[in-house]
Image (cartoon, rainbow, N blue to C red; front, side, top):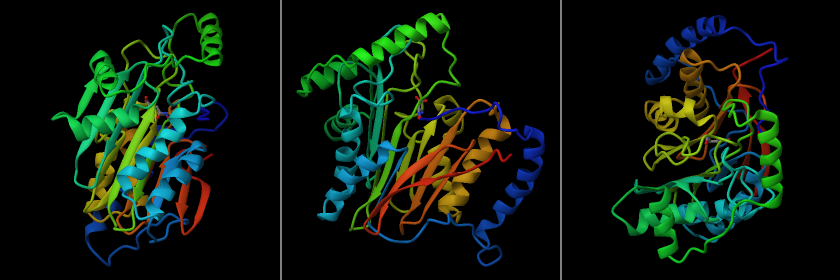
Length: 336
Ligand code: SD4
């Protein structure tokens, strides 16, 4: 769970951080000058394909399914869809698919997007009654001239495509919501709730990249609220010439910086995936109140190197590479 975070962490003030990172920002501009600066890599990073990487513990089970597809010679886009469906179908997970926490009115509304190696993308947001938004997003990509369908229109499209109408509010999520209503009196505190999206990136044996994100979003959000996860360029971006990036955490902050697109563009300019994730976080903490918010970024380049970075300690990710599917802790901005 994304346990946030500020209290007791001994936060370094924004200004102090800003100063040291300003320096870092200057260093970063030198990335294009090959040979002038030693590049920073994630200690767990290696240039090996195929690779599947995804956010949080639920990533382990999702990676298993995704890796099977690419190991058998399948495409990264199919691996992404298959992998993410595992998390969506798990009713015990309270942040994705069935069992996801509802909005403050008790409605479960889901967001998802998917993007392939050709630059095609599909997305759904504010979708109700459908267990697998990632597959609906894929259908939007494959079968419509559009990128994004929202709300009732997305729901109708899904039903017309043969997806089954399902009540996504489980007994457990209903109980939790009713408890929340009593305690919080209907006031969403958007920056301290639990919210653990699964975002995934994969490169198949051919070297093609794809990615996807799926989530029930912020727990007990206002009705109609949509986060970064279905927004191409915010929660997810891939470019087959460069690599890919994806996000988890408070969507509002990611949307304001188009975080995933930014990270991919930084890699295009020569940043390593690790450097690009760190710069993505720096852009947020430089301008936004970050004390009570968490953002985690993951990125991979086309060789299979990866990077991960977050604001506060606590973000972890599942990496499946060289026949091992393992959890790693991301490095973070706020040091004690
Ligand atoms: C959102 N970014 O709706 C999603 C939530 C999330 O980890 O990623 N949680 O803002």
